[in-house]
Image (cartoon, rainbow, N blue to C red):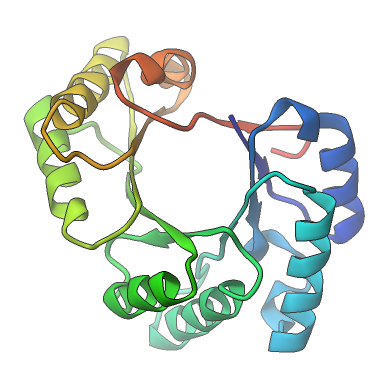
Length: 208
């Protein structure tokens, strides 16, 4: 179980970890949700990251930072922060379509930081074959964990995701995966995806 920290400040982070940290095996900090995220310098970012790392104790810390604005400059800033994260995180979460993905994965390997490569479909659920092919394509990035999250409009959509995940996981040499069906109809995937090869389930505390 991975506890998601979508907090606005360090006080909220401390509160979430104090209440829910014991139930999780991994902590993921969504650094872009912080009130001061737009003004991060390397020094201020690492100060927050290292403080959160300390609060996590022995639990691995994953760091994610998404660009909330369109355009090359926003993506460049987000990738710069992900570079800084390599000095504090045990793992970083990178979008599969990130133009700097190859460079960031190689940097992470040099620093012995794990990488989770993520692909999201926010408005549809591909069929099981397409999902399995997504994992195969993402495998070529060199990432350590491959994550596919797609929107489930109906219960059958969740089974498409799980079947596609299972099809990939059964291949020889398959990498660890995460399969998430987003939306109310996909909630069952948070519980049973492990039976289909998924290695992480995500949960939030009091901060959605």
